[in-house]
Length: 307
Image (cartoon, rainbow, N blue to C red; front, side, top):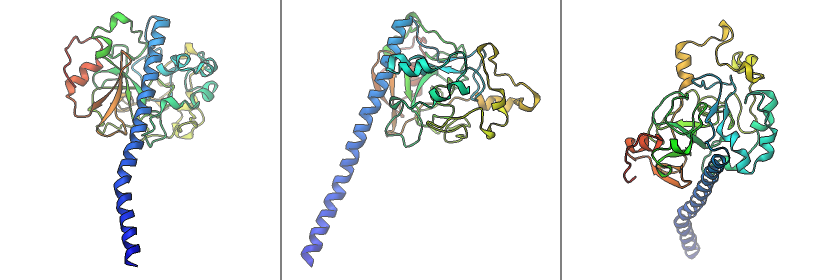
């Protein structure tokens, strides 16, 4: 009996010793997949630039700043690079005559693309977002990142050099308005430390009434407080202005809907970022704020040290 208990105890100790190693090995595999996803998206960005001589617009809309609500054209940068991610069928299937939230494009915005998801993230959301600014600011035409409202960044506009400019990073709380939406769902800034608590009313964790992966619905959801009735149907009608007094936003509401948020991940003490040269780096959440802001700004001409 004593011998049996001894054997069981030894086995239990061995399992306790091996379990952390197994978990670390699994996380290492997930990290490798995450880095590969970012590299593929970064390569698609470069291919897009070679084909069009400019980087894709972070968000296409006739007015700004962008409000994080399902009203407007809001074609995001991920839609534009689909052909370079071997997703030509999804690109062809998207009808650019209509906005992201129109029923016509429902099937495409609910299309599952594995490369948009970090395997370490437990949330049912995509996790790769573009950098639109070096500080917390609404998504607008005058941002200093590389992906922002109606942007068309050329090679000569990247004055700090590709290897010193962040193009894409991770966000563990994305998912409010689908991966196709050029809002805080696919754009973030360096106005907050990495992995800081930056959840706003626009984050997936706070507001998921529009649905989740594969189940997004905008024009038929009763929780939209009537916004679905004003779905934009054609490009000439694009507007984010309220259409009647019932849906008029207060100044506080507008400020809340313009908040974007920062980068975050489910990895330990940092997040992965894809730079303009296609390289992927893991940046610690303890990195100096000024270095992060310099990396997010495409043309500040500041020297960047080790990080």
